[in-house]
Image 1 (cartoon, rainbow, N blue to C red):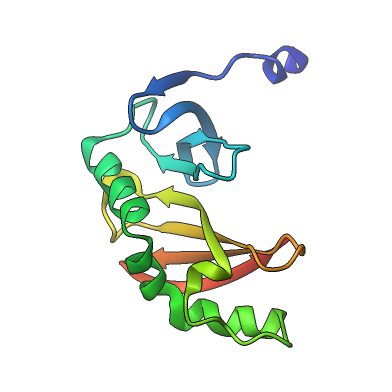
Image 2 (spheres, rainbow, N blue to C red):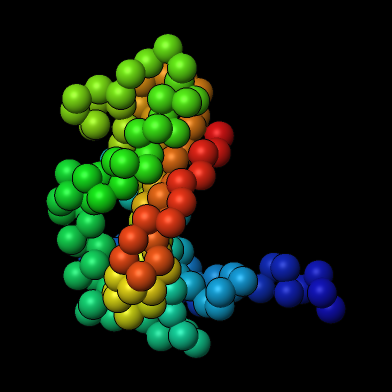
Length: 149
């Protein structure tokens, strides 16, 4: 019986702004996921309740983050730049952040409310190391940065 659950189709929707979303289950509950394999797109995860589709507030949150990437970077810079410089010892962070990093992921909070947990992920562009810098927010403030490959 478990074998059939593995191959069961997950609920999905085609959202006019966010694209194809698939419902998944995680440790914080259900969430919609937009996977991307294109460097021009941003991967998304949107916290939800039940199978509720993304809210207007969540779409607005997405548009605000993606539409003003300089603003989101300024919120994380004090936490991200030291990690960047620690991992790339021979490199000082450039004056223009987008020369070194690209926004590649946004974890959109439940109801699009910044007070709820959310995150943004940046990919290192300047080296072929595959570093991903994920910045975690709680109550609207950065609470940590992880580095993955």
